[in-house]
Length: 305
Length: 270
Image (cartoon, rainbow over all chains, first blue to last red; front, side, top):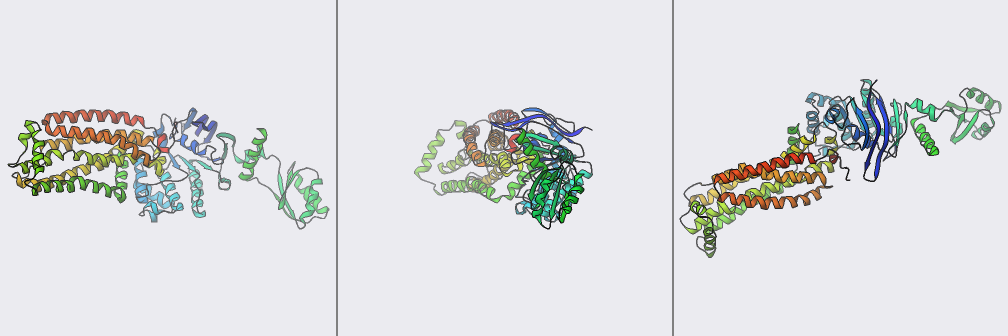
């Protein structure tokens, strides 16, 4: 399948600062790709290069089979962007802002109205945007980004500073659009919000892709050894776990996080603990979260230099 | 799409009272208050050394111009000369100042407000954005010029008209000036100001830098406007045409000088 977005050896500098340094990644059509990385990793630059709002110094970018450098207007007409701090013309109403967006993206008023209703902002459209809360602004930004039903939606830190309800609206949008076969790229440094929605994770750091792939594949690569969480009535007795076969590492985080050489060891481990008088209160195989994965990937890259 | 950008820019301007109220005061001062004071004073002071001095100034004007000055006494002739020739260039100063103020803020303002990011990600071409910003800056200034011109006409006809045998204003030279000569001068100034607006880092810098452009253009257009009013209509028409050609060249090259990245607030030079 042709990827919706592909970056090949893309480099972008701003004077002395290298924002992206030979970035390669693809976002398959109809997938949710999460760009993970700390502030300054190059996520926003990636979004800007994708729409052709910015020009790379080197490398090739394709979006929906088009080159944003030469066919930028066509690319931008088919892409929706929610920037990190959505800005509007504050002196005028939400509806005037949406109507403006609809006109330049070739959508009609009914689509603008529908988008506003979808994000629960229709009731406030007659107010000037200057009086909107952060949550209302984000909802309006979401409506503005999707009113032309874009094939690719790029969300750059979309939940920053949002109340839980508005953050949920963002995640619901992603699920909804992905379900309709749209390609989503979400930039975030908040790992928990990418959890469960990412088909693919791209870890960006200092302008370079450190790792990319589906979360499960990355977990297998970076966290190959199974971890089980164990707790007991008398937690001090769990120290004896280190003496048992197959135990590779122990980390105490309240309960004990035990790294084993095989998941098959878990029943034997429990039996052995019981035999030695331990009364387990919790035995839970750990499914690595994106956060676990993120820090593990970072640790691995630091170690390999 | 250009219309949409112009419409929203004008609408925003209309809703920003802090911005347009001073501009209205400026227009009112130049088109109404100043003429009323000057022409009213001349009407009241029928015999004074000042009238004699103005008469001396009128005597230095070309014969053809002197023949066109109406009035059967020195005070009336002085009022007529003031109304038609000496106050004329304000028709250039006011629209240029207003358009410059709006234009200086146009692109850098989008960037400061963050809305430039949205425009940069939109299907609008840079040329469309440039043309829309130029027209959205030109329209308020030119509209103010036309309205001011109408009010000025009313003022001078009321004050001086009764002394020269009826309404005499606007003259052919003035009509040509307002409809044919002023618009390209505003466009020339704006094409330069928009380039600055796209390059500077803040609206404050844009306003400072635009004054460097506006002042010479005002002085040049002031001179041209004054000269044209003393010249045959055909000269004014040709001068207007030349100004239009220069404006067209600057507009075409101006749209190419703006990069989409500048809307984001970053550039290769940043």
